[in-house]
Image (cartoon, rainbow, N blue to C red):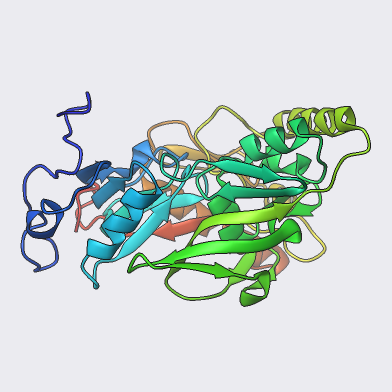
Amino acid sequence: MPDGSGHIPGHIPGHVPLHGQPTVSAWSDSLALRGVLRRHEPMSRHCSWRAGGTAELFFEPADREDLLAFLKAMPADLPLTFVGLGSNLLVRDGGLAGAVVLTTRALGGIRQEGDFFTVEAGVPCAKLARQVALAGRAGAEWFVGIPGTVGGALAMNAGAFGGETWESVMRVETVDRHGNTHLREPQAWQVGYRSVQGPQEEWFLACTFRFPSAAMPEVALAKGRDMLALRNESQPTGVASCGSVFRNPPGDHAGRLIEAAGLKGAREGGCHVSLKHANFIINDREASAADIERLILRVQAEVLTRFGVRLVPEVRIEGRPAVDGTGAPA
C-alpha cells in the first residue's frame, strides 16, 4: 500500500537502469523490504543547508533488519552513502550516484545498563544529551551543542564545549556494504581533532558509551541547558546552515580568522557568511550547492592569502557538479 507520500514501500517507481546494471527492479522488487525506496530523491530535503542535487537511489529502512536485508542484496559495485540529519553534508548539484541510506528512522534506539549507554547511529546528539542527564549520569552534556546524529559524531569525532565524541566510547558496532555486522574496540580507529580513520567500507550502527553517575543529577541538567543557551546566543540557529564549516586551526579559531579577513556578510549567489558567527554559511536565498562551495573556496583562499593559514573544512562535500548549471544529474 502507498505510505501516504505517493511512494510504495519496497518499490521504486520508474524502473530506471542504474550504472549499466539490469533495471533496479531486477533486484529490488524481489526483496521483502518494509522501508521506502525512492529514485532521484532531492537531497535538499535531507541536508540542513537545504541545497544540492538528488540521490540516484534513496532508502529509508524501517528498522535494522530491513537495512541489513537491503545491504545484503545490493549490487557490489553500487556507491553507498549513509546520512543522518545531514547537518555536516553538502551534496553537489549534480547529485549522488548509487544508494543513500537514511539512518534516523531505523537506528534510533538508546539502551541503558548502569553507566553504559548503547546508542544507535541515527539518534540525534541532543536527544542523547537529554536522556543521559535525565538518567542521572554526567559527561554527555556537551552533546546538546551538536546538531547531527551519533553516527555522524563518531565519523568525525564531533566536539563542543571542550568535549569530544570518542572520549567516552567503549565499543562500536559497524556494518559493511555486504550487510555483515562487526563489534570493534575503539583502538580500531585513529582518532584526532575532527578526524577519524579506521576500517574501510564500514559504517557505524551503534556505539556503547560510558557516562558515570552524576553526584548531583540536577547540575548535569542545568549544565546542558546552559550550554544550549550559550550556543543559541553565539551561533545562528533556526536557519539553513551546516554548523561550523571549518575546523579550528591549531591555536586559533576559524571564525576569528574569517572575520579578521573582512568576510562577515560575504555573499555568493543565495548564501552568505553569517554576521553572527563567521564560521557559518547561511543559505538565505535558495542557494545552489555550487554557490555554497564557491563561498567555501573563497573564504579558504582569502584566509590563506591574508594569514597564511589553510582552513580545513569540517563539512563533507560529495557528489557531482551539475554539468549545465541547472542542478540536473550528470
